[in-house]
Image (cartoon, rainbow, N blue to C red; front, side, top):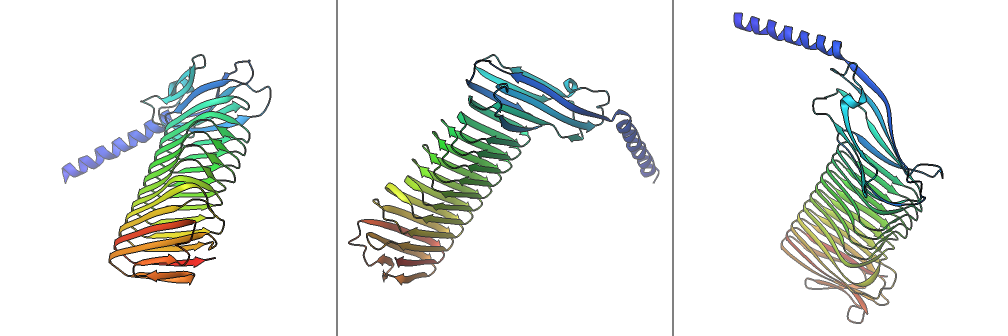
Length: 396
């Protein structure tokens, strides 16, 4: 009992001392610090690296003709113990180089500083009309990047260890090379505006977090689209997309959902999950060349909707596989010159074929009546180890 009482007294004294120290050393640091770069030579091609260790980074644009090429404004608002009478340079280390071929701005937090409240934001303001190559990174912090319409970027690469990335690319903007976003823990949201051109690959990657992407009318991707989440859902919506290489959507643990309408595709479409459902809608696609669609699920259900009212001058082959999961496919095609055939195989489960119009079941084959005479076809194999297969077909 005596030992317990002594321990309680010591603990109480220590806690009391701690709070006294906290109150005595508490500090609030607020303000702005500005870094400005201006070549004074009109529109430039410049490469920049922006990084912050424990701060958000916001990328914005200024359309004023008199604006400098790059303005960096550190908005800091920090509170906590041991910060009394401290200044910005006591909290952060700034590395700033606006003279090298690849210019940079780094904001690092000093290791002995652990503020209780840190609301620091690094605001990067770029002058419109320059052609920037941007690399943006945070260790702990969100990144937002809003590229206005008609702007041009040589390339865009953004990464966050713990934080979200949200990016909007405005109408008629151009990214000449790759567009890449990567997050370890956090979500990614991307909105690609109308008539945006990306000359390289479009990549989004998360370890833990969801990915959501929107491609608006007449956006054009000349490389491949790859969107991969280890733990998280992947969702893509595209209307009027022009994709010149393959499409890959994958989740290890999570759902994959894709909706593509009135778009132009070629090469390969790959939809994959280890544990999670796959849902896909392909509606009135211009298949510029023969294309293969691969849907692979270990544990999860597949739901695929194929609507092809417009004529096509290519063939679509596909494979759908699941170890444990049901498959549900609806296929509606223009019967003038398009046919479709599905072969279903299941080890444990039922196979159901629903003829909505112009289809017939031939054993485990479900085929449109015009299949032999059709100049373009959909041809899919469907294999599940444990699960049901259901296909509905209609000639329009």
